[in-house]
Image 1 (cartoon, rainbow, N blue to C red):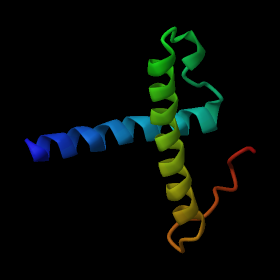
Image 2: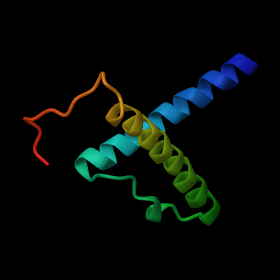
Image 3: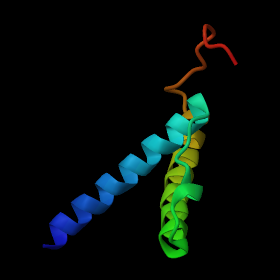
Image 4: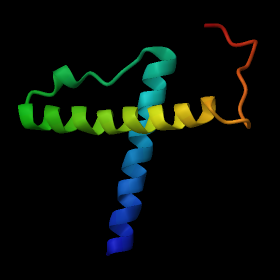
Length: 76
């Protein structure tokens, strides 16, 4: 039971992080304004915020790592 809860939490964090990466790379984002219930909208925004935080941590680690380098072909 505890293992399954941990696995689902990890999956949810991974999906949220992928959504943050999509938002950062393409500009497309989940439109939380279309959620009519205020409580659900707040939960969705916090959920997406967790993904943003995880993405920031991963990006900071990659920038400061000797194992990653900037791709010169990538357009800014």
